[in-house]
Image (cartoon, rainbow, N blue to C red; front, side, top):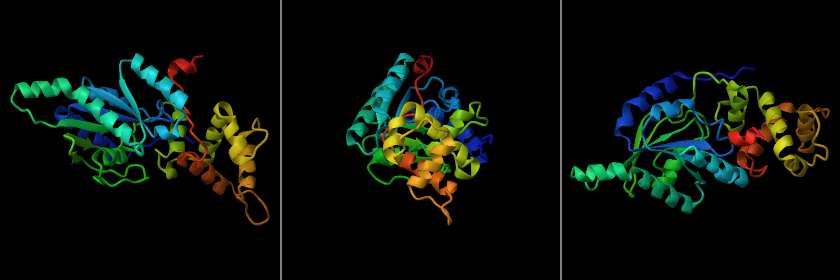
Length: 286
């Protein structure tokens, strides 16, 4: 099944970002730490252009620590400021705010020379749907400044959020690109919940996820689903998981729909442990 998804409000969002970038000091791009490459929108770099940019590896508490370190090394080599963040960790909040201030310092100094000494730092939050933008804004503001949801595309319009720490945030709806050149990346986005459920074939997504786990973390399948031999066809693995976890229809047949939903829920919630599906480009070539 070919995954394509570009709702009309996302095209509108692209225009919105372009219109308001002139008022922004720092662009903060959110990537899912589990899939930094697949969750990167190629539109963002062109939209942001010469604005100071920070990449936030969000949901880092769900990602493999060692691989996250490799991604940090990769972005630093590309001269891009990057920081891993878990919105459950108060220390991450302080680190991110300090980095934002550091990136905005030249702009603020320019405004101070013009006589505006108390001007707030203005930042824009960019990222694909369901990567955690609203949650990050709430995390930075220390209050429920915007509603959060697990449904892709929840944030529909522009929202400025004033922070007591002297930061003004402009939230925007998530933006996906019109065409997925890499269907494997699209499947990973679906696995993390960035693409709405009605858009993709859950069987294809789950079997792709299981194939990745077989390769990068076979021990997870052994420990979490009590599967001794993980070197089997992914369809057989899914059936074994369904059997082990009681996803059965009357008569003992495997309920594939329930088994697929179970695997996706386990992965998205972190019950499978810290898993990263994307490796940095230099690592992929090895």
